[in-house]
Length: 281
Ligand code: C2E
Ligand code: CA
Ligand code: CA
Ligand code: CA
Image 1 (tube, helix red, strand yellow):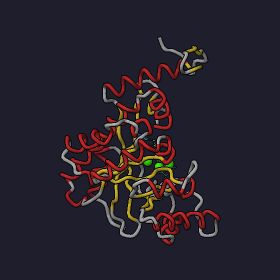
Image 2 (image 1 turned 60 degrees about the vertical axis):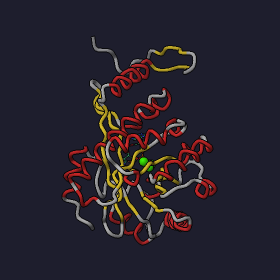
Image 3 (image 1 turned 45 degrees about the horizontal axis):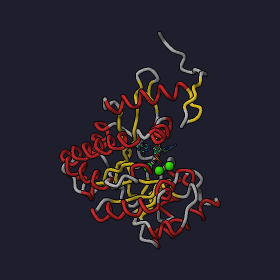
Image 4 (image 1 turned 30 degrees about the horizontal axis):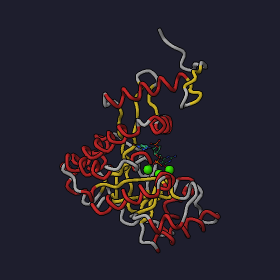
């Protein structure tokens, strides 16, 4: 029998407090989807603004739910984080991204030092053996550490400074690139930027969407870019949608852009096609 998806019934469960029945079902379904490897991973390019060369492909999780249809990560990553499912989910995305990268490398030798980027949550960072797991995934797929970038939000990194520092250092020593994600949202601390071993910061979309020549955001973004450069970090702007944003970001010396203006997130096979026909700007 079909059940009402918008069920208003709630059950009480001790540690979680009030949780909607639909959430509990979603958790069960997500657990199954991970076990059965039913999640999809899409990829979105990050592109050097000067040369038009490919810098990276960011892996973004997608879920084709059997009855609810396609569910975006904003609707299941928080649940995965709450329930601990982010650990197997994250491993799956990492492994899948490395597998794809190996295929692209093999079929498109011109990719050069382009990386694949994987988003990592706070809970994963806290795993003592996280760096080993990353190395394992790379080795299993015949990739070098220089072909992987890890994206971590500042709030995730700040949640457990000690664990973050340890894991970042281990990864960086291996040669994995590290980017601080959603930079500028949450509380940003200069000391994080100084202390964390980083390669890049990803300027959040909320900044990029307001960056025009006459705006206050223009001056804010200009100083963020100067600051990042002073610390030898590359700057990646996310959510680039317009020609105007591109030219403003170029003018400000932003290194790398990502957004619908270049390409939407795409399936692995579609990405292969795009790599094949990629024209440097
Ligand atoms: P994020 O890391 O900030 O990823 C960027 C999001 O912006 C993606 O949404 C992407 O599809 C979207 N986007 C890209 N270009 C544009 C643009 O030009 N305009 C607009 N409006 N949006 C754009 P998506 O795929 O829905 O992912 C949402 C968030 O879910 C991600 O934000 C990331 O934090 C999280 N996420 C996705 N996959 C994973 C994963 O495998 N693990 C973890 N831990 N988090 C993930
Ligand atoms: Ca990201
Ligand atoms: Ca981001
Ligand atoms: Ca973001």
